[in-house]
Length: 257
View 1: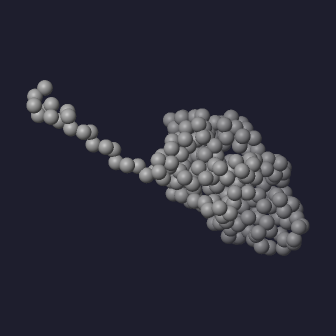
View 2: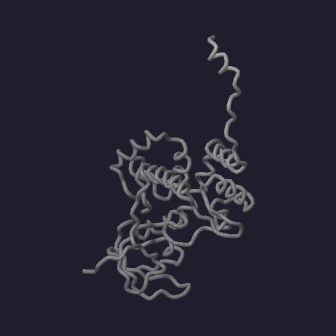
View 3: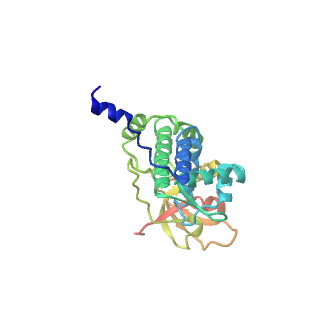
């Protein structure tokens, strides 16, 4: 060892720059949410995003707990972790919104979920009322390579079997200007662009009525409070659907000939 090297070896090693407590906490939470808790975190982000996908009001903690089927206290703790990790914005007693990073991660999971639902229906013969639970499991298990292969096999679809939009790999989507059937005025003419998959029983009712994506519908009578909504289908004439069924259907306006 020469004299210069020996002198350098005796010099003190520069200390690492100090880390703030907030930075240490955030790094720790991010690490935790990328590990064992990642699946749960992704499920939260997915529900938060989907709540405002077709209407503007942000989700509240109690609504989030109901959607996830969890105790409010458990949801509160996870929301705190998501906020600390920079994935959601939330103040006590207020609604929850996604940050830009949280939205990016939610769209990534929704792409997985909706591509898998489409694959199960088109390739494996599942009914549209059967795919949600299967997709919940598979979306966390398959690789990005397999997901891309599924996307290519399906011809790069832009919507799933219920009309929910499938984000591109870069997170882009274009939402139609749609109105919910139970809010459509008398005389409204449109075609079905989305059917909520939250209640499988509603999907079965719509199946029996022959109401599916792209089906043309016309609101035949002025809706009344608490009563069913009369609609005219292109095939099969006039039917009356309950408010709960009408609330699951979104229409995009059509120009009547």
